[in-house]
View 1 (cartoon, rainbow, N blue to C red):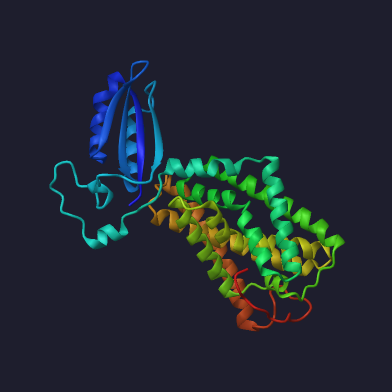
View 2: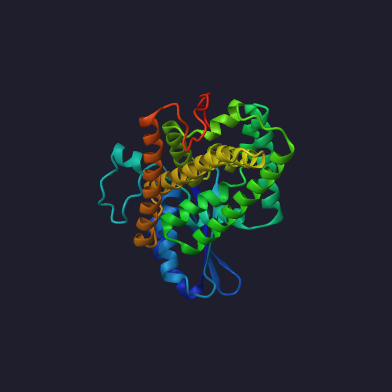
Length: 355
């Protein structure tokens, strides 16, 4: 079980209240005086109990001068602490030991504050962000044009759109409008920059629409919707547990970066209809990632601040997803071989691998 070292700084006058809160959430902590009339508590806390601990501390002490909380990663703890292996017992000791089912479904994620810290830097509109976006779509575009799947995977690892995409789902789950606005603006700027660059690239290089890596980005299959939903759920699950951002980036980029690059290439080379089909795939993937992301964040126990905003945002995303599913399903019901929005007859079907 993962753990964190939580350091709480509090004024001497609040020692008693702080200690009583900490005792309810962990069994091992240390207390020492620090300069300027402050006291520091250091406690080892299971990841699943950080959220209630920090929330209770903030609710009581957030307006107190000198109060602060620092959360650090812990690699190992000796001797073992009981609550790191099982659900923490109540202070009175009258709670029954957790069943196997209760232990299995206990959330084990990093705290909301840690999620905010992890995602904050990726929402800043800086030259490095735009440069990373351009390099990512350049690698993806050239890799798809030459049919080199390994090169496309390299573009996914760069993952410039990871932060804004995760932030959109997180903002909808929490009901955080400010975070949502920042995420949308950063994502839109990144997508526009990627499209503009690949549009110019498509004007100067030869683009063959029959190359499978490009052709597959112009046809939306039901399997693509399932793939995007899986990408969103897996990405949020890994992100909420503090996994490597590169790992999360591959999960998300597999559904976002290649369609953007394909759309720009097609539009720049004069294949407007193919470009719009790739944009439709991009829109479908983005909606799926947000729907799956909101559900996964809720399952992980991320507490919404405003259920009305959360439910409203989720219902909007879900309605758009159902509309897209209807369009894709209707196209297959009419003729499986006719591409969406076709005006020139069927395209040859290719490998429908992760795209």
